[in-house]
Amino acid sequence: MKRFVPWIALVVGLLIVASVVRQCRNGRAENYQVATVTRGAITQAVTATGTLNPVVNVQVGSQVSGNISKLFADFNSQVKSGQVVAQIDPALFQAAVTQAEGDLATAQAALELAKVNAARTQELFTKKNSSQQDLDTATATLHQAEGNVKIKQGALDKAKADLDHCTITSPIDGVVISRNVDVGQTVAASLQAPVIFAIANDLSKMQIDSNVAEADIGAVNVDQDVDFTVDAFPMRTFHGKVVQVRNAPITVQNVVTYDTVIGVSNPDLKLKPGMTANVSIIVEHKDNVVQIKNAALRYRPPDATISEQPKASSAKAAVPGSTTSPSGQRPTAARERKPERTVYVLSYGRPKAVQIKTGISDGIVTEVTEGLKEGDRVVTAELSSPSASSSPPTNPFSGARRFP
Image (cartoon, rainbow, N blue to C red; front, side, top):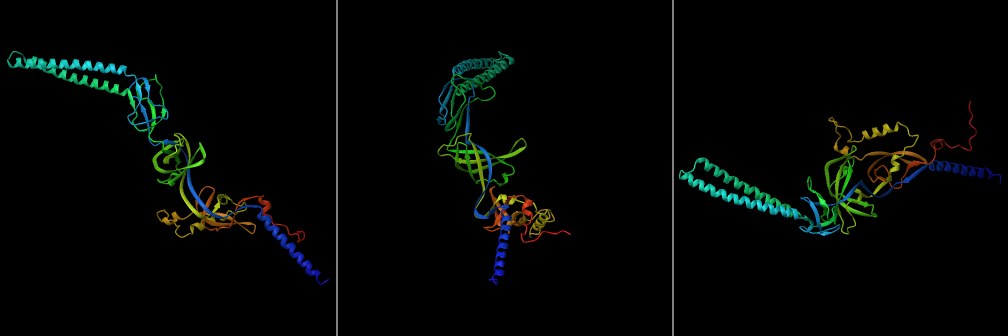
């Protein structure tokens, strides 16, 4: 029996040592929050806000001043091109036409008399019975009468045009989205035409005018797919396409944005003009790529030495094709090279720095093109204080430390 006592003691000691080592390793690992490298789809998008508007929105106004006597359209009315939508009281304008017709008749009578006098004076002058002055006077009177007839004719045409403008018609086929006057209201067209109706051409096809920040506008191009939501239907995602990126900048409080027009189909007429749209312009999409959480890119251990960063930067400079040309410009290959980042992989309970190359990102996860594989565990945060995690565990089998 005494022969087995040393072996039993040895086995028990090894088990105790293994247990202590495992606890030490697990203790260090439990100090960190980790995320597993996975595969999946990533969609990189540019986000913005915008307003839904009709593609064609015509403001129908009045070119003459007067009282609104009749309205033939209301909100949401379907109208056709040329259809009468409003009527201004034509009484004053009809009177102006009658007066202009009388003035024209008077001018025409004066013209006939001037023609007779001119012909008679010419005949007398030929027979030496009239002077040259009388002939010149008769000729000038004739020319004045002709000019006066043209003036009165123009006044009559203007009066008739004003009378026609009392009848307001729709210039396009569409639906009335706004009515700004009521029957009996007076409209004054002194400086600009007052708006009576706003008519949208076709609400089944609309557009979003979105303001994209100048930092993101370089990634936006025509024909890119767009997903957007509106507050009226928060659980539904609508779709569209970029149809125009306008060059004119919009500056508000020193913030520069660019108007990006997005075409939208609205067959069920759920979308209304003026709705606020939360837009996501799809810049790039990839399926089945290696990805990590963005928190892993932001994590830095507290005991990371400053000397590691110059090494990483010098390593980037040593990559072939990344040297700077004498003109100061980098070659095309260097500009197309994916950016390098540093992440920390959990190795034996401690974070270990690893250089990776990243691709697209959706703001939550980022594509990894080099440096990691599926299943790796990367550190995203610390769960305990650095001092506790950095201090080595105490060996229970060692004696008390002696100092000289």
